[in-house]
Length: 132
Image (cartoon, rainbow, N blue to C red):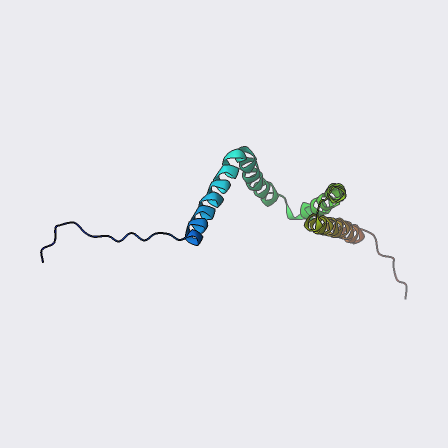
């Protein structure tokens, strides 16, 4: 039997599930790319902020690190207020859970900042002389 030089390929037809899966993957990738394109300036700003923050923090002397971090943790109270406001407008259980976690973790951060500040200030207090 002589071959005609053409390679015979069998075309397999995709069933409905395979087509839906392929379509969902394509839609997901298009959605991700659309999100990146729509919010490219905000994404650039976040990436730039990360690099700038790393550069600033790495140049802080060790003696200033504790007071600056405790102050920054205290400022975290703004996040708590924002989380409470968002929780008040939450529509659904998942939003309420995330809001509660934000309030809880923000509160822990603020309390931790004040505890660190208090311990740091205790280091500078004079200790009373003990007479024997």
